[in-house]
Image (cartoon, rainbow, N blue to C red; front, side, top):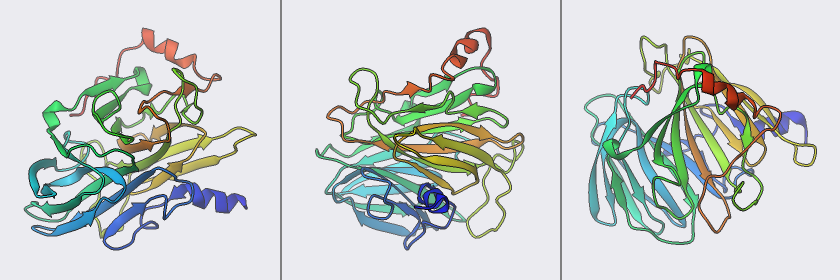
Length: 307
């Protein structure tokens, strides 16, 4: 396989993975690097709806912008969303495998955007609503490595079968997913096998705090993302990322994610794997693990938490 083919396999610029009714759909069926995890994003105007069956996947319904109602097998949930991913944490709804789901947009104008992070799973859990006020918000790191993690679907903060999902917000000029780390070996108590999807949104600028609406050509803000492997399991990604871009990580070291000065970075992480236990266990790149020790003498970035 050529280097360009490999690059295209792991990096999906905005629009490349679109297919009705989704503006983004990446699944094991559509993208070869994936075996367990998936992500779909649907856009809906006022009172528009989207119906789907979860099949063998468990999912979250997570507003990226706008609010909605979610009906899962006849049970209805009112979901308070947000203007954009930078201005507040959102409610979400967990929907199980083998369910019929309906999303009804309640945006008052424009179009709402709703993410459906998912994972193939074995067991069926009940549908559950998670209010924004119940989401643990963590400020991680220090100095220019400070970032915010919204643990709405983290392994330690929400019960599910395989699916792990979190949101990460990185202030303009900061580095996150750093030091680079991996989770592609089964080492009980130390590392768990999890493939991962990164979905990015970048602010127009700290003073504006939003993202361009669908249909516009402007994607001014940008950042960078890095993935690299080993001689035994090579992978190589170094991409400028903008709103709507996706990076797929079947294995390898990943990080940093770097927010360019002037532009805040958001990414939605979706993780799943074959392990019998749902857990997030990572291994830092030993070349750079020492960096964590420097944080003890640094203060967290005062711009966080955003929300």
